[in-house]
Image (tube, rainbow over all chains, first blue to last red; front, side):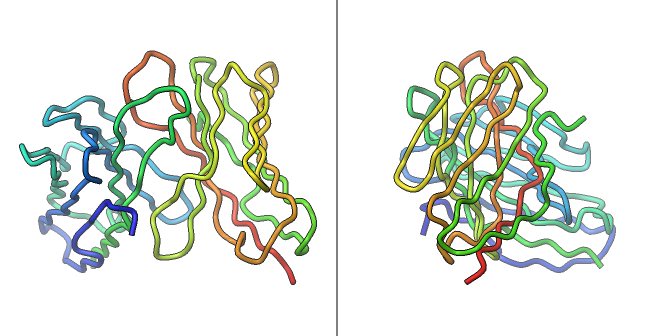
Length: 115
Length: 114
């Protein structure tokens, strides 16, 4: 158990629908990151939140949005889903960058299948 | 535009031998590099990292080498063990402070043959 909790583990939904993925970061971590891993693709950075505020944006579609709540958990909302949105979605958390930084701690991911 | 490239999708190595995984990058602003290991149905886990001010970092069986002039880093695993079979991702962080998103390569699937 990495300490980063993602729910649900699996999600199957139809095109055009909307889903919400949830992430609870490791205790003490203020930053939450969302990544997408499609077939044969690396991990694509979507968005980062730090202590409730959006900090950095990557290749996130306009149909996707996220937020981080006061208790630091985060939700990724995916709407108007398309077949190509089928992927593994990972959440990661970290404390801060510094000497000997160990990067992120990843959750086990949510596998989204759009049919 | 792939700023972090892992050109070998897969690599097969005999148990006990050395595994060498390679990674190239294009962005000169990267100042920190990391390797992650991923088993099926699990999230990536941190393996080893190196700052751009160093050229080598060692942790047990794992050593990462950084060649800044060539914009190249490599991960050496010696000796390779069956449990090392996994997908390995190279990742890089841009300079500038803060915890910005890491840029990942597409991964190399390492297979350790008994």
